Image (cartoon, rainbow, N blue to C red; front, side, top):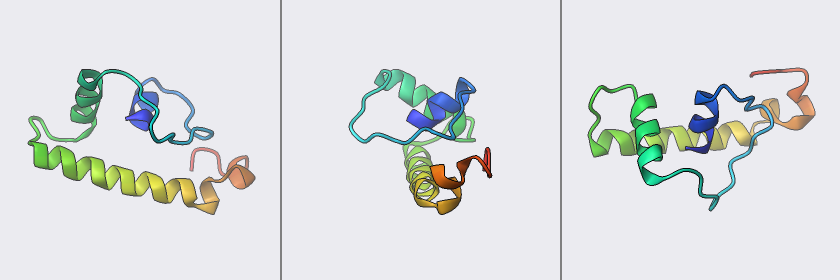
Length: 79
């Protein structure tokens, strides 16, 4: 939710890192955001669960990637 919420507001995500345990927004706002980005018109709980697991996996990999690190961040903007 932290990434999607910032992406929706068109914030720069290049220097943002997920903070586990940080609560942002309400449960209703989080669910609405997930449903918006899920890509399904009326997603089931299983589809939302699969979407969040996939997104989480991809974002963890992205944060650990050398190409997305602050060291190379200036050379690969928006990557």
